[in-house]
Image (cartoon, rainbow, N blue to C red; front, side, top):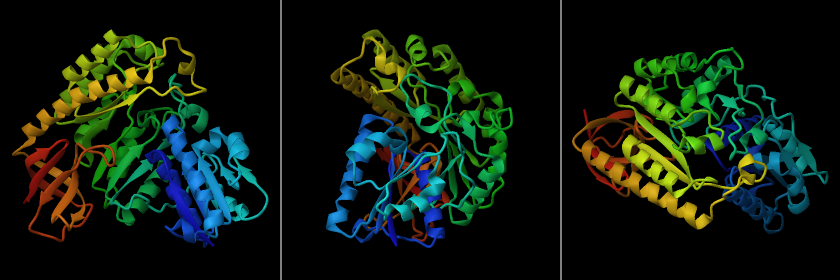
Length: 441
């Protein structure tokens, strides 16, 4: 039996997909990249916002066509859409044969086997269940991967559906994570990107304390791992223990993804964020004073209900003053089931889009100025690969996370530099967000 697997959504979803790929291969089933050649198609879905839900639905419909255009016998849908919209899937997407919930990915082989029978099967466990440790098959195709250190969330931000899809915050035991990271390193992964709904709370449920600094120390002891990057660190949970570990541990890159969503204290309270503007500014001050070269990435939401023009202008001035190294802006997405859905003073899409574009225009000018300052400097770069058509290497500086940030393209006399290696590159130019340079010894 041949299985084609599609993973949609975030890097945390990708981590689940990689565990499922391992279980599929371990069972003796064959994996194929060609849906026309598949007996069963598996789609790990996302529905965080409306556009993600639409992508998942379209992927299911497209896959279902192979039941008549190919020789597809079974279609399995798993992930967040399965958890949230099981009844709707059964009602409106009859081509789906088996449904697997967010905490049931260890049942993927059973779902695949049952999907070829006439019986429809739903495999949804308690959201707070954590599947037993299993191996992984890296799905990035690159020398980096993501290590999901916790699942679920207890924050209940008013715009976010995640707690209703993924259950309560629950850390994955440290020994399991170390074993998983060792397996990734043995497979050639040299950069670990730590992910969770909130990485900074790691261990509070298992060990009664924040254990992220300890986990970082354990992971940094693994041979083969060269870079460790922290994503999704909520500002209110960043403390001096974590900052100190980042400052002294040579394998932790001086980069932090710290989503703040807004700067206006009234909007932050309406979002049920657990920090105000002054608190955010203080955390940024602590990070930069203790780690002077740290690159701070954040995300903002434009057009949250109740956001006035004055609040929008406040956010623009905040971005100008703070000068985030990396920044992304999303327009507010009104999601059913969240508390923000019923908030008054909802803002129209045209206004939210305009506000997003204005913030990003400011950020773009800041990044260009920063890139100018980098010309002539030597920066460590993570090699991602060689582009033979342009005779140039592509990589990322420590200031750039995979998939979401910029690249640096550089020339080298040595045409046998392995992907995943760290090299020093002198910046010689830039174009838009990307840098250009040449390797130095």
